[in-house]
Length: 174
Image (cartoon, rainbow, N blue to C red; front, side, top):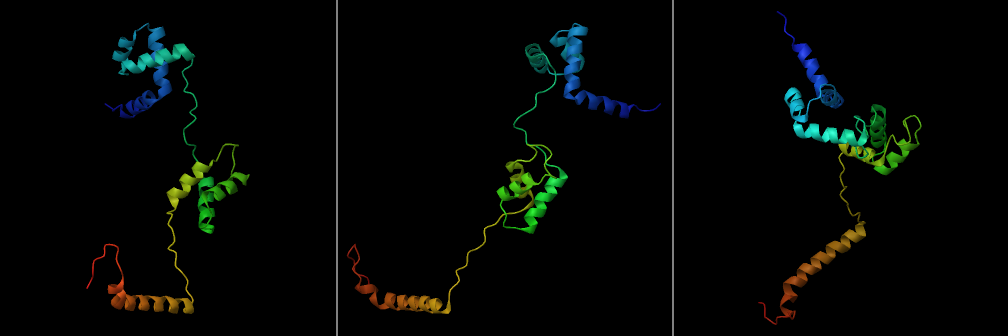
């Protein structure tokens, strides 16, 4: 006898769908006239989920989820590649500059809100490591000589003048 494992997997995938669960709850509630406890026994959906969905359905009257405002939008492959290309071509460009370039490129903009600054920043931070360059002071030979002379004078001063300094606690060193 053949196993029905692929069929079971397909049913599990369907049952994991949020919309299907909501339709199933409504069907059991209004077609089969079952209460929340009986629906839980039939479907293994937690009773609190059943209660909250039924209350929301009575209040709003629809089973589709609303569009969420805070969810980050996904960049297309073309937009991601453009961000990487811009950054590799000029490593000194900021995320804001890259965002402006992409926002002005009509071939990459799908809709008015298709790309935002935070997405560009997230993509740049994901693909590139930012470091701060070590600042090196460039000295002329004349300034290098003056610095060396100052250090040598300070060493000499420290050796023979240290005992002549009046310290605030008035202790004698030496």
